[in-house]
Image (cartoon, rainbow over all chains, first blue to last red; front, side, top):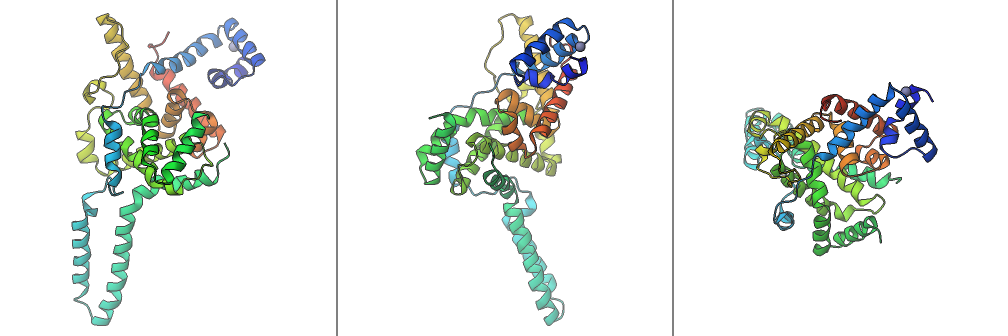
Length: 145
Length: 194
Ligand SMILES: [Zn+2]
């Protein structure tokens, strides 16, 4: 087997995805080849060593604290602009500004503006949670495990 | 019943409003979720906060849960999306958050003590500590998809197919991500392995 073919099997050898006969041929080549041996050692060595990064343990009471958060509203990580007070002040300011125009024009524009703002606020409210959940439909619907 | 089957059974009970089942799911998967996030963002306290958000999403999504996917694949998909949201939030609040965050590559700065697996030899401890820091940096500096693939493959033992589902890409793309990540890790960790 050529050196190139061997190197293309590095990942499968690491992940245990070679057939037994392929694995034997791979190991024999690497043991005998002065070019592939150091390459393989480095490639496999780095992969082996990252396992040394031990995991952390959950802190005491993690489960209880998680359960206590069940009643939290699904609104996370929002910028100050989308805090309820700011957002309604913004909406009110937009409505006031529009009132200086002609009455009919104002009516039309106000409705449109409010609809836009409302849609924007709604979007900001649920954007992040939606993003988190959005993929789930795809994974639920298109699973081929 | 395999762990996977029992996860699905638990999730179906959660869907029916069974709080005990939810508690059991959290207990069972807390370590995997916390560590997946911790390896990606580096901050242990923030990892716990985000892990709680992951479980809250699981709870809130339970009504729509269909047992067509392996539960852990579904769970890691939520975990990945939560991490992506956190990165997005951090970039929005770059000025206030990034400076305030502790050095993610420095395990000491998190105030968190990893389980002590080092030898009592002080010199050896320094080497081990430096190595762990270097590994954490190397993994965190990978592009997001490569990093997620590495974490799920190396630390959580997911198959190529499961990782592909979480990343919403093909199996061959997953292999390519892992290959590129390994090449980068080989260069960055050169001198640390035999
Ligand atoms: Zn060779």
